[in-house]
Image (cartoon, rainbow, N blue to C red; front, side, top):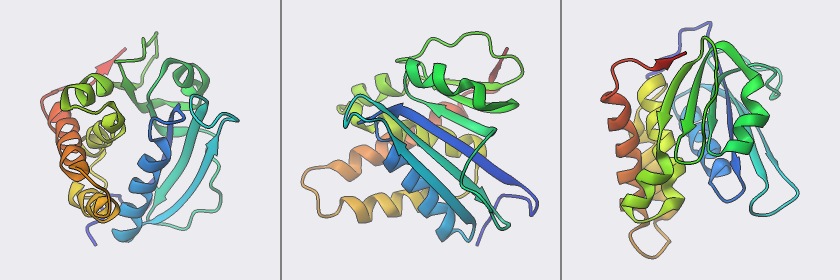
Length: 193
């Protein structure tokens, strides 16, 4: 296993967006890849009362050590896909945490000390031909920053999940992941306010 986490580090992630933006899939992909990579994982998905359009949030903890609760009081990383989710969950990010914003749908405000990466995920996904892969663009960006495990683990999972689906879903998801990875690789320093 190629764990990039030091032995005493735990990564607490909150993924938030509207229902239908793929937060549950995003959380599941990260959790499964982390487990395959030999890490300990807990997760806690939560949906709004609406099927689509309500808030969907996924609490995910990854560690090399035992994890005793899936609840996150203070996140190391916050990945948000829309303005209402940003407003609702920004207070849960620790002062020096990582904030990934889908700037296609979010206007950020003053957020002292956070490492902010502005990712136009919906715009990138739209140019690829399917806005539903904006979550995978964000995943690529996250993996490029944190390097918790190889993006190949995600691609293997996507290929397995999508093999029974019609169309070219794997190819577009792969492109979305690669766009997120390359976008971050082209940024030398995060925007820190």
